[in-house]
Length: 216
Image (cartoon, rainbow, N blue to C red; front, side, top):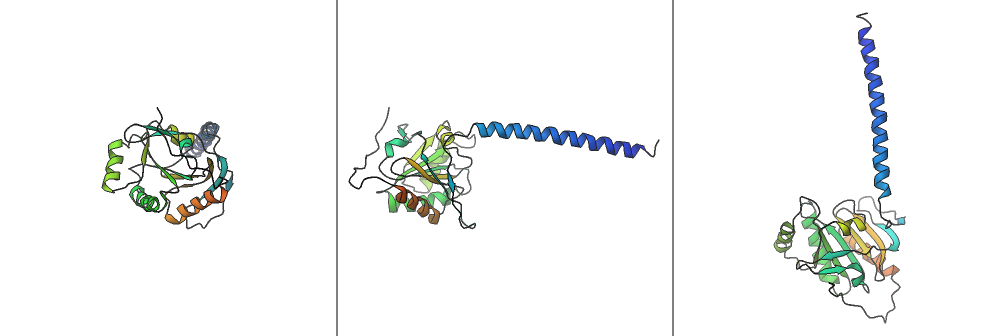
């Protein structure tokens, strides 16, 4: 009997392992299904084949979701207020290792395109690691002059289905979500995303560009 005991124990442990694995897989599947069921309708329709050494740009042709963000003074703005020019919506946080590098790139792009492109550089405050003070310090220390907005309750990030920070979205002048890139965005892909907005823009050349107005 003693000789058979190790074999019996091995069989018992194997059965316990198989049962645990099966139960875990079912739990993960239920959790994944629950997450998928909550994904908003704004999902890019087409993925573009890109150079694997570059951050991926993914394409879409759906209306960008309406979002509301606030500036440093608490004034509210909606995405639809920025129609008439392409809009770059960038979600970032101070704790992201790439934050300062990427914001430096956006400052350079803002200097070049501020007259023809709207920049919504949106700080996500919903994460417990982030505070408005931390974000403002980075902006001040970096001498950044682009407009900064805040997403205090994550409603804007959720509307765009942001899965990681940083993530950037390109919206054309008519409010169509054209492309997005997850992860740190370099100038090369910024230019590519912006070009896709211009390529898909059907705005009349004579149409006046509306200025964003403050909402209550």
